[in-house]
Amino acid sequence: MPGPSAPRRTVLKGAALAGAAGLGVAACSTESKLGHAETPTPTAPVDLGEASAVPVGGARLYKEQRVVVSCPAKGQYKAFSAQCTHAGCLLGELEGTVGDCPCHGSKFDVTTGEVLHGPATVPLLAVPVREEGGKLVAGPEK
Image (cartoon, rainbow, N blue to C red; front, side):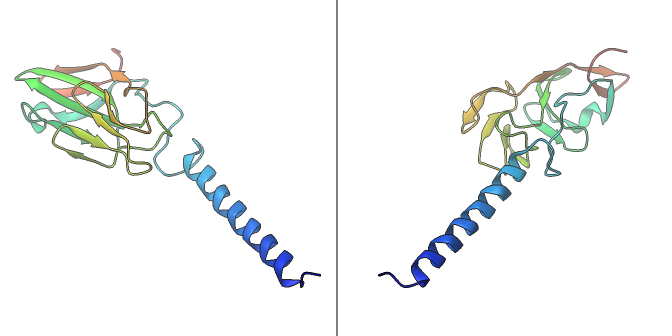
């Protein structure tokens, strides 16, 4: 007859795993405060500041506005949502023109929005961007 410690140990392990699984669900939930938003792109025009802040051939991450902007050529801009399409986390940083998601390791080409490394399989959402008087404005027209 097995001693009482074996079933108790099994129960405790199960409880610990269930708790850890619950934390994982919370981290991936769109209700989490880890950088998720219900609407991953601006729904109104958002002023991003000076257009010159985005280097030609490079990109800039605007975390607060949840947008990443690249400049393929002088005066040309492309923008995408900075919210990962896998679990909704906000991109953490850029390495050149590669956006890195800190939650699960997805990587995106921020000049095209394409996935470079999963687990994400869907590209970043495109965001309209324009230059107005030397400033960048992301989101829909007024």
